[in-house]
Structure formats: structure tokens, C-alpha cells
Image (tube, rainbow, N blue to C red; front, top):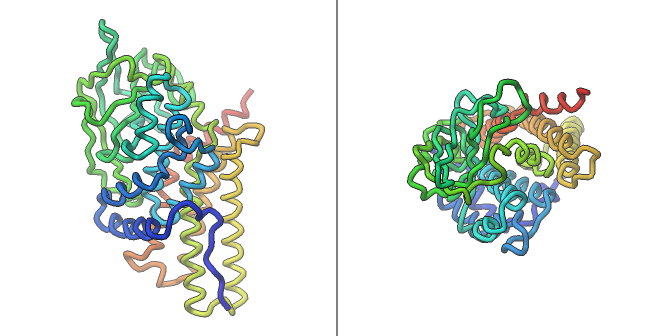
Length: 374
């Protein structure tokens, strides 16, 4: 008896690129360094224009389409899926909040892969909710801004051509105020700005090919035309992020699909599908996988009464499901699933990493709980 490995989302990546990205996942897990050649192939694939409006050279894809592309990449390379997700997130913010000049200048380069975008929000001591930022933006007499501070856990550091940087431009908040805080502002900083210095050096357990590193801002001079949104208005931009329906849960679904595919291949190779108990356990895994995918799809469709809440739920459910599925597949495979360097050990480490990415799962729970308070 044989069961084919399939996923309804695998429609955008051709077989050659899929094989290259899968190979890259193995290499980067071993070295802990980004695979620049694989990133270049992703840039050239046309996929990075998914979220860019058609009038600016992209595909005008919805959040549902973004989630599908992210899932498909994650099925073969979760690290590159995270890089792509951050690129999509920045392009969406520019599309929604950018001035006409910013959209015309930046989006075509982001659509065709000439530029790769990354977010630099996190920093030491700021907390998961980014309320206590130490990095600052100071407005000068001529209207330009000087940015100073240090950012951490920036995915795509040293690979990106454009960084969406979050800094404090007003008084520090005196009370908790959700995700982000009053007095914070976003700036779009090109990688060739002499005042921005990205560097690698974070030796992560999972997502080892994601080029997650540090970004220093040292008297980084930007013009007011590089500001995204109103001064002090970053919190409103952040609130709209989860309303979009694009979700890191898509990365988790891709990871879970890859783990499930491993289990099916193992079963076919060892004739385990003749065993009712093994068939039933696979069916349970498939059911959990499809439930996670369905919630991610619901978030992307934005049909729920509260789309933002559904986006939070989708990340929580999918990331938990992915980790559980990886663990259950490891148990099914026995010793074959625990050998160092095996694909399943990489997937499990990557699955755990998604829960720690912003908004972290704990912050998702806090934000969801806050919606019930009156």
C-alpha cells in the first residue's frame, strides 16, 4: 500500500527552485550562515512581488496568497520563508502607509527582487511588546532625523537592502499600551546608509539560515521623506499589521507539512501503512495539520468578525500544532527521527523558533485577552 505525499499549496515554486531551497536548508543548518546564492535565486523567482500592488510591478496578492507562498517556501526551507515573510510585511506597510513618492520609488525594486526588505523592531530590554525602546530618532532643524540605537533579532540582517526601523521619537511611555507605544515612529533606511550597520553573530538553535542578527544605528541620518507614517504614529501602523491577515502561522503550517511528508515517506519505505495503528496515527497528524492550515486560511481571507484576533489565533494554533506534529513524527520514526543532521531535528528546532518570533506567542495571548476586556 502506498500513500502519495501531497500538499494543496505547492503550486508556485518550480521543482528546480524547490530542490535548491531544500538543499540550502541542509547547508545553512550545518554552518549557521545564510546561503546568499539561494537568497539570490529566491529574489529572481518573482515570488517576492506577491504582496506588491500591480501598478508598482507586483502581483497585487491578498494576505491569503501571501500566506500560501510563505507556507510553500517553509515546506522546503523555513529560514527562507521567514526572510520572505518579513519582506512581504515591509512591502505591505509601504503599500498601506507610504506616500505616493515612497511607493513609486521603493515598491518596484521590492517587487522584482532587486531589493530585499527586513524589519528592525526588536532590541535588548524593549520587551516582546516593543514598549520600552532605547533607540531614538531626533529631528533636526532642517527636518531630517538622526537615528541612534541597537536592534536585535533582525531577520535578514546583512542580506536586506531596506530596513523598516522602529525608534522612539517622543517621550517614553509611562504605562503599558498594547503592542508598541505612543511616541514611536517608523523609518525606511537603505542598507547603503553609512549610519546603519547590520551584522550577524547570533548562533540560533533553529532558523539557522535566516540571517537573524543585529543592527546598529550610529548617527544614522535620514530625511523626513524616509519616515513611514506620522511622527509618533507607529503604534497605529503596528495595530494594522495583524488586521492584514498575513500570519507567521503560515510558516508553521509549512514546517508541519514537511514533517508529515517525512512520516509518509518513512511509512511507504518500510511498508508501515499495512499496520492499522500507524495509518490511524498518520490520519490524526493530517487532521491536525489541516486544522492549522484552515485557521491560517481563515486569517488570510479576513472573513472573521475580528480579523486581527483570528490572525493572533492562527499563529498560536499553527505554531503549537507544528511543534506537536514534529514531536509525534519523531516518535513514529523512532531512532531514525533523532539522528543528528536529520531533517526532522531541523524542523523541530525551526518549529520552536516560530513561537518566539514577533509577536511572540505569549504576547499573542496577552493581545487576545485584552480584546475581551470592556
